[in-house]
Structures are given as structure tokens and as C-alpha cells.
Length: 418
Picture 1 (cartoon, rainbow, N blue to C red):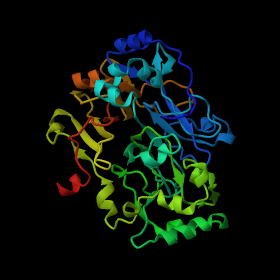
Picture 2 (cartoon, helix red, strand yellow):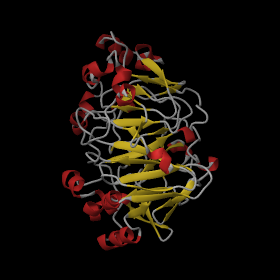
Picture 3 (cartoon, rainbow, N blue to C red):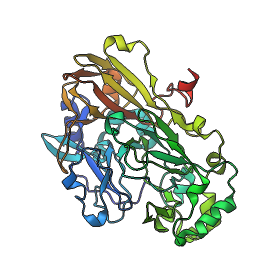
Picture 4 (cartoon, rainbow, N blue to C red):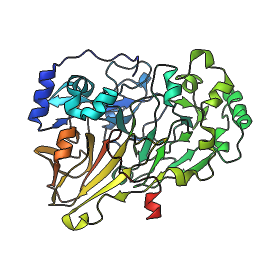
């Protein structure tokens, strides 16, 4: 998938199989923290304030936590395992999830996904910023292949538990206003070094609503706002920033062209051509991309739980990822069956997931091992995973799935039509 260096393997297949067997189909994961040098952390994803710059000030603050990730972060000056999730065994980080999938992929993600991709091809994250992210896009598979990468469709969900405050700009610009021309965009690129290149004058901002989300295909511009965002996506880290100045901070041209062929780094026609023009100027953009929660089972409330679809829909006809939010009432216990493997994190309350503790931390030190994140194998998911709420508040978890696991998931707009 990528030419980015990965850490050497430290485990053997038998060790990974033993950990999976001991966990009865579940692997406990350590928190994975990722900094971004061009953004300002929002400080709401539980990382201790003293650890925000744990990678060093030159790397920027930590504003992301990645979940069940086998995808390396494409950061300059990165450490070798940046972005990779680690499996916890006997209270210690034992090996990466990437290694585990390499060793026993069929057992972890199921034969269909392993046969097709030979990897866990998705990941999710929290991103948490004080202000907005530059207006940018993610390349398609065809475009990313020009630099040895894969494309990156993605999705957003705004967990209410992490968004009691919206920070500086809880609005997201999407696409370009209908009627915008390629010549309009060319002028923005030509004005890159004159300060604000004015691209947001060509776009439209939507107010973000906790408890809702968006589906964002490749080649569509978006400037995410300052809500904490849960972001299931394809396992790639390609992007191109089309905005030159954000809240007075300069965005270098290198972040526009980092995933474009070197000979095209100053070819404005090529750079403009990377955008899905019709998708960006779609006059019914919200209708095509906005996500509202949809109950999996309308009658589950009486049983003490509610399972909602929070990410769903297809990208160019393909079901690439999906996600659900499970809420279990205090004292309730429920067994949930799913079609395939998933990564899961708790965002409220405490209890158990099968035999394992499931606790939502209030604060996490950098390097600390939590009990809020697991990877659930395909076989365990299909057999059914039991969630038990042992607290006095709701136990809330977010879980995301890989491609073709939920072909019967709702389509975008289903919530509105119902």
C-alpha cells in the first residue's frame, strides 16, 4: 500500500494466535496518538495537557487518536510506528495490529476481506482541533496510484460526549458554490503567496451538529470545523491542501502537492483537475452527503439498549466502511451480532465487553495503556459480543467496520426519507 517504513516484526504467528485465543476473539489495543504540525490541538480527546507535545514542539501538538489502525501516519519526521495500533498482552504493548493481521489475517478480519485486500484496509480516528482545518481534498485510487498510494474516502461523526464545547469554528466548508468556474479556482492558486488565497469565498459552510455526520468521497473539498470528529475512513493518509492561510497560519505549497507527481507540482491545470468538479459544485450537496443516526432495531429500547447506524452509504457504488453507536442502559446486558470484524472504543461509562473490562477514561497520559479500545475478530463479531453496563450512566461505544461487511446498511438520505 505504501512505501512508508514500518517497524520490524517482533512477534510470531503462534504468539498472535495465543493472544487472540486468550482474548476469546478480542484484542485489547493501546491508544495511538498522532500529531499534526500545521494544526492547533483542541484538547478534548482525553490526552493529559502536559503531554500534548509529547513528540516534541517541532512535531506540533497531538490532535488525533487513531483506532484499530494498520495505516502509518504520513507525517514528516515521523517515528517509525506512528499511526500504528499496538496490541496489549499481559499489561504491555506486545506487537502492532499490522503484524497481527500479517500473521493471522484470515482469523482476524475473515477470509473474504483477507483474500481481497491482504490487510485491514480501513481505520478510524478522533481528530480534535481548536479551529478549522484547511480546505483540502483526498485523492482517488487512480490519482494516489501515481505516487504509490491508495485513495481516501472518509466519513465524519460528531460524538456528543466529546463536544460539550465547539471550540473556535464549529462549521465545515464543503465543496464549491454552484457556478464556480475552474478559472476562479486558478486565481486562488495563483494568489497562494499573497496571504489568504480566498478559496473559502468560493465555498459554503455548514453548521456542525453533534450526533450527526457526513460522508465525504475522494476529490471533494472540505475544511473540517472544530468539533471533535470520529472519522472512519480508508486506510490511507493522502491529501492536498487548497487553502493557503488558516487563522493566520501559513499553509505551505508542499501540503497542496505532497501526494501528486513531482513533475506536476506547479501544473495548475493538473492540480485543478484532481477535483471532482461536478461533485464539488453539486447544488444538493447536503442531501448527497449528510448523515443522521438510524436505529438498527426500532424495538430495542425496551431491552435496555439502542444500536444506531452513524456512518453508512456507498462511495461510487462501493460499500467501503460503516459504523455504529451502541448505547447500553445502566444495569443492562445485551449480545450484539455483526457481520464482520470491527474496531471499537468507548466514549461514555464503564462495564464489560465479553470478559474484558471496558472503561472510558477521564484523562490519559501519553504511553498509558487504557481499557477503552479493542479489536473484535470476524468470528467473534458473528458469534456475538456481550456488552454489560456496570455503571450508573449509559455505556456508549463506537465501532467501525471494513468494506463489504454491511451491504444492507442504509443509504445516504434514508433518515430524512423515513
